[in-house]
Length: 294
Image 1 (cartoon, rainbow, N blue to C red):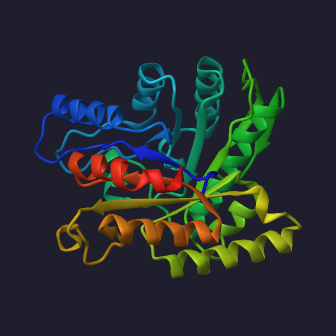
Image 2: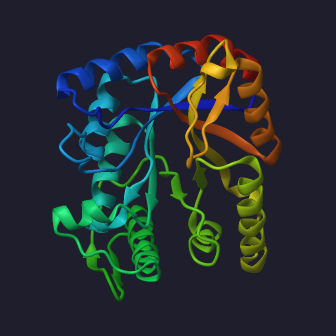
């Protein structure tokens, strides 16, 4: 298990809590981590009703400066919220300023109420995946070609310069499990793949489809790093671990949580992005679970 490491998803919002409390919580969480946590991740959401909610890229830039020993990543950017050429420029700059610590995660977007509130169009899933592919192509072109040009159905750039270009290539993570379209994009473009909140059996099913897309494109699936995002609730008494009626949590006592994580490792997962109901769960996870993967 020595090639397995962990990343913390910081809490983007706290219901009925002030923004200062949210910041204090995240600082306490990060300072509770062991050295086997290598990354900090920020989700891309603009609002959760009226709760204080941290914007992704602003927060990521703050974390990069405040915690220089961690790599930082987005999990995942909704491609529709920002012009992809601007995202490419911002990412290249952040990669330059951090000495290569950035991972850019992108996805097609899903939170319709957020789109409506902020005035973004929310097209059908097929269109959102088409937009995602064009956004990916623009970002990767701007990181590697000078100048870069592209005319698509949804986005365009014309002789766009992105200097300084990333001194170290920016890993591109694609999140999602759409079997016909999203996983094909993963096979074609991604350095990392993320799928979340599912059972081991569902992850194995999605992985098999991803591998089929890789085969049809002539790509070695081993080139894609497999990651899994989980809400974890771990307690000495398994009955006290928090579970969700619709969403899969990794929950139970330390032995049960270790066993489930090991099953994901058996599929090839080497990085876990984890979030917790509270600091007590996080600290117990660091103490009782993480050492089994070091």
